[in-house]
Image 1: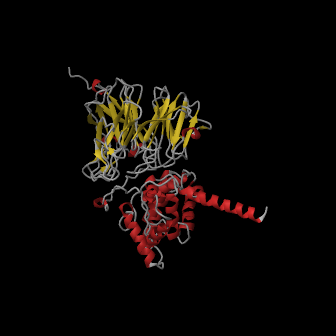
Image 2: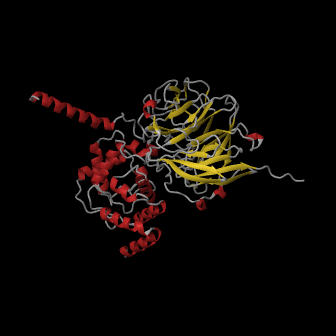
Image 3: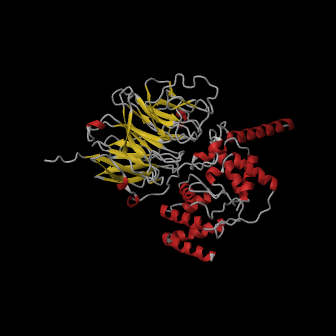
Length: 186
Length: 410
């Protein structure tokens, strides 16, 4: 049933995507997983991310303002229309995080830090994200920790500067606890 | 190399790398963004409104929803300018350049034969804006200043990198810049406070002016949280500028401001004194006379309305009552339960700033019934025929507002 539903989205999406970029979809799956849930360290899961967040990321990466060389290469010359189609497609897929071993102490520390810094006021109480603000729940742990560090160091330009401002002064050890906590949420 | 020298060298390399690791985390962090968010608002879900990063075709712009006073009419003038903000034009108005924020582009609009075509003039920049002066286009990003010479007929070729001359501080938050060249042939450049509420370092929360080559830096206004636009009064030549009030003090304010600089060096209050003498509850604690020597606004502009561009109307197409009047774009609120702004207003005031009256002019971008909106008016520009252009940052479009007197009944 799930496959069927996903199949329908894939079909709908395919209508908007040119043959030249159909290849790109396979490229997405190669790293982000066939269902948008990544099993590769350092590569984020994209299933169930808010549509606007995905759109923004893809546009900024195409513009060379964000992302890495691989993503920039893949997105070269991709039209706005196609970007919207990718964003719609992946926002509809179901996030599935693997069952990971949880360190209860680290998890609770992460939970406290998240509460203290009011992460939920933008990322939603269950950390599923909304609009331009990404889903954190079930995201890969090492990816989250890395991204937070890059934000704090002003190394993730192009997005809203609010996120960088939200992380000023938070020590790296706290990012690890936050990442542990978010990655264990479903 | 003897052993001691070697280990010394190794130690200094290590020290250097440790230093640069620290340097990456510099400058000193201002307080986190939620500072000033009281416990009562801890669960508030208010967050900045997401912009739109993809093109909006003309057919998807509900321009008919825009409401204007009798006799005025709006049309779509240009589209495809994702994230369009401040506009600047060459002398004959055949070329316009439009800056953006997130998408990092400066667009060039060619206006010829009653049609507009759009191309990207500069890209991959961090929140760029531009201003045309003396035949050149000056592009200001947060970390860069570029000058494209001989731009009157369009930007081409490599720019001159003038960054070093301008001494730009590194923080990004609130540091997109509205830049203009004054009658004094100087560049006017603002530097916002890189936080919601904090005591910022001395290079922020101010407006500076420079000679066109970046020399002669002078701070002309301090205590300015985040100005997003300014213009010179057509009679007095004084600088009038908008400024955003701080967030997280509730739905009622402190209100945004329209200020007037009557002499260089004036203090406009941030971070201690907001709007009309609202003393800051976080950073002005225990401070007596937080509003002493603070220049208060010509008028407040509504709570969280996000006042952007201001333009004194100098044309004759619009009726007499609009001539010499300030038009101000209010992009619209995020830090407020019920949305407010999302319009263009007029501010009628004496040349000395007294007796200011704010009146809605272009409305209908936002529907108070369900808090929804379709457009966010950001900046204003005047065409030679006296019509007024309004950029819409949300839909990446420019609208033209013109006036025709209703036919008199015979």
